[in-house]
Length: 388
Image 1: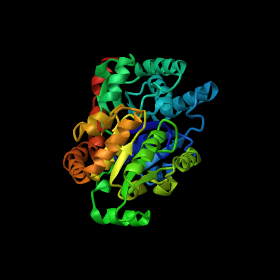
Image 2 (image 1 turned 60 degrees about the vertical axis):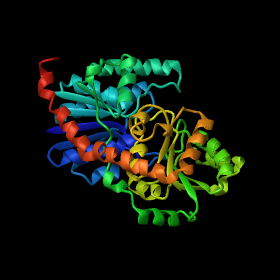
Image 3 (image 1 turned 120 degrees about the horizontal axis):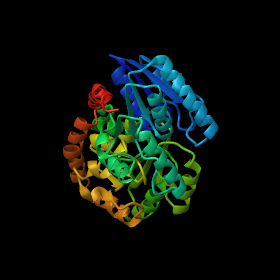
Image 4 (image 1 turned 90 degrees about the vertical axis):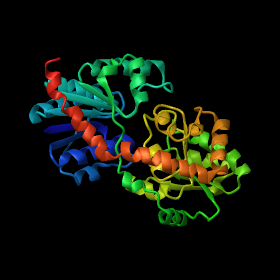
């Protein structure tokens, strides 16, 4: 098949890592194209990784994340021209802006099968009502122009259906693929990582993996850790990731009195994340919106107990391991209690993560499993011809 993936920005992020592995899995037996906007920015680019694959890359500078009517119109026209010239059998879009423009362009050019993946919904409770109204309206229109909507969690489907984006039968869940073997539990790796980041033998290390930005929940973790550090002097924080909130968060750590108990890795390439995560005893994930955060299965694959805000798809994974690790969003007291409870019985928590969590995640989150499911979905293109 000739397959075209369209995504707004190919930066370092969960949606992009997912797409990169889709490209990798499909490039061996298909002619695959990646169409993307400019990847410049503080997050870093994954374009060099895509360039190593047998994939043809087309950059559309007008394809940008913010709403910009003139640039959006130009991007739409450019996407139509690209699709008209290459005639892909499948167009698969990712992210909100590329998903809206790409689906419209693909259907106008009579692409046989159009799919869209929701990695995280563009509408959510933490932005203005008018933005949510605009995004929901746009998603409803775009949904009419695709054959299948793929979500990374059942929770995403439920939210989209509740908002009236499309009927439930148009959705299918495919968990985000990853190289599960990179996240194996390994004692030697654990010791080497702790030595690299300067942790002592008795330190109890809580890791958080996320961009340093709004809605990622660092504020709640820092507030909880300030109390936890007084209860458990050996507690330490490992903040994995970079971003524009670094200075703000460093100031917060100083004001809360635990700046000497925190280690910052800075921005890491996805290949380096498992090596940093290996240093942790447990993981905290406090984002307020996240589709299904890749760090949750990644942490469980490494046998790390994972405490997370009960938002979006977190429950689909953690309820299989330990319900007490799910925390009410924005509840600092509950977060502190959950982290303290894990630390109080860390060996048992690690066994639960390893025995119940890792087994499930190895089966469901392998990138090969994801690519197999996508191939099955693309295979439905003959069925949909007669339904349009």
